Amino acid sequence: MTITPATPGALAIPDDQIIELMVEVPAGQVIRYDLAALVSAFDVGDPGRIAVETDGSRHAIVTIYPSNPLATMPPPSEDDMLMDKLGRIVTGRYHNGRPARKRLFDPRTGSAQRALTFGTTGAGKSRTLQYTLACEKKNRIVTWLADLKGGQSVPEAREHVDWFATTQEEAILMLRAAVEVAQARQIRYSLLGRNAFLIGSPDPLMSVKVDEANRLLEKGAPYREEATYLVKELGRTGRSVGVGIELDAQASHLEELGGSDTLRAMLKEGEVCLLRWSSSMMRQLVADGLLPAGEQLMPIPKQLKPRVLRSQFADADEDDDFCDTQGTAYLLSGPHPTSMMRHWRIGSITPTPGLDPEILALYGPDEPERLEKNSLEAAGEAYEARGTAAMAALCEAVKDEQAAKTAKVQAANGGRGPQLLEDRIRIVLAASDDAMTADQITAAVNADGGKEIKVGSVRTRLSALADAGDDVARVGHGLYAPVR
Image 1 (spheres, rainbow, N blue to C red):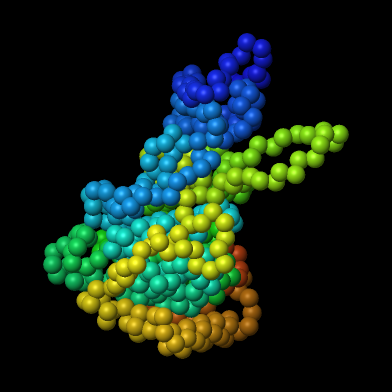
Image 2: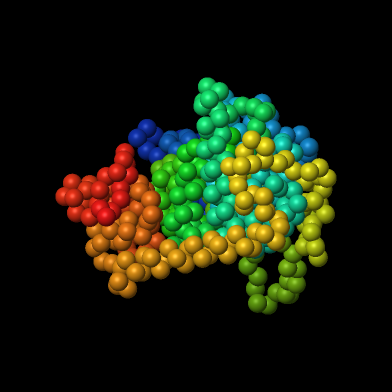
């Protein structure tokens, strides 16, 4: 598709009508477009007036609006917040006014959902999360939330979720407890002959969320290895027993999410929402398979006010009012991944001196759903201590545990930084009290500060070391331990 600059006699765009153009390129070609060229060709001024949706191949729909269709959004209705028969809530609108939906549960497969929401600072992650949390409460879902901004991201949620954690140590305790609950449900459901989750089974649907997840999973984070393992375990065992997992992070880069190909592959099969992104993120989306090759997304600007050039001799414009794009996004896992949408307006338009009354009203006055009695033993001491002074002592124990693990690794390494992958594998195994899988070993190796290693390389070295009987032994299916 070639766009030429607007000229006299070019297509005139009526001020009060919506224009829709069906565009295609010849067979064998893939459609490409330049937003700036489209704005210039149709002389619309505001890029927000043009929406482009492609099928990733030869076809596209170009829609030109009289004004930006996503400039203002209403708050959600009660019906929007309730799951439909397909387990979805309405989270906002597409540019064409059609509802944009997020799945909380898949009744067709009996699967709890995995989800990933990311975008730059100020893109609207916190308000988006607030809405999902309020919907989960309305739908009687047990919600465990780790707000790793010290509880500041979503402070209104504190009394409206079953577990509200604010530190990395408590997040680890929460993830450990969630894995235990999922495994306990797995055993109970197996005895019942059940291979999927049913709403009202009588166990409630459960959702575990980590906000600012990059703080827990980025390279150099103290609990990165264990957190990555626990999130993967929840993704593997939780789905069929009604325990979902969601990460909300600042960036999409693999390094920000545990450096784990397995974890990223697992999450991208779930609900993926992209808010405003950085310039380098688009390449990463395609490389990681979150966006199909050939697909193209229009950038989401920070604000909707068009940029106007003014002569230095003109009167100064003191009007600094603008409409931001908070909440504007692409639902990459939805049926229209290249169609821009915007989430409902959540909370007060301007900051409030304390908890936002509009957000509190969204949650409602009812008590949040609590974990079922059959899983209390599995959730353990940490669940019982949530929201009490006893949690501080448990978090200190996690810190001490981590410090001991670090000291053990340093002692095994003799104070030297390992260079060879074989040495790094030996050190990781020597520091562990239990046998480890290749995925666990890879996560631990990549947490030692050395060069990033792929799991395939670790598997190759493990096989060679075990075959040679060189300090490493196979102790079970896919499990390795040091020769002691």
